[in-house]
Image 1 (cartoon, rainbow, N blue to C red):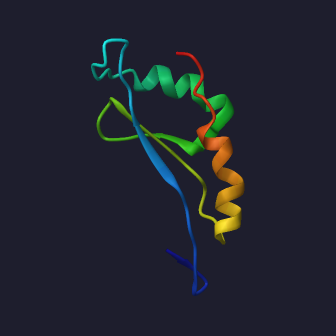
Image 2 (image 1 turned 30 degrees about the vertical axis):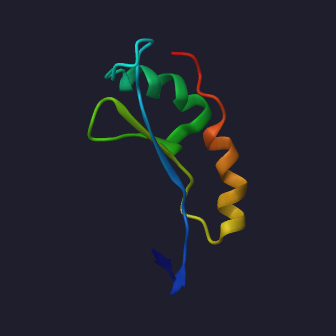
Length: 79
């Protein structure tokens, strides 16, 4: 992506939601409700209800993305 002719950067990770037996679980609404107070719009649903995406905002440079990323990937709240 570019902003005013300059390249921008962002980081995203997708996680599959599984239960204790390792089976995919469609608990996206529960997970989003638990994660939203800490992650806000940095956590998003995907097309499949067993997948959630976490990412930075659009960043001006790698340093800005590096600064945001640790807040995105701390351990998830218990759902």
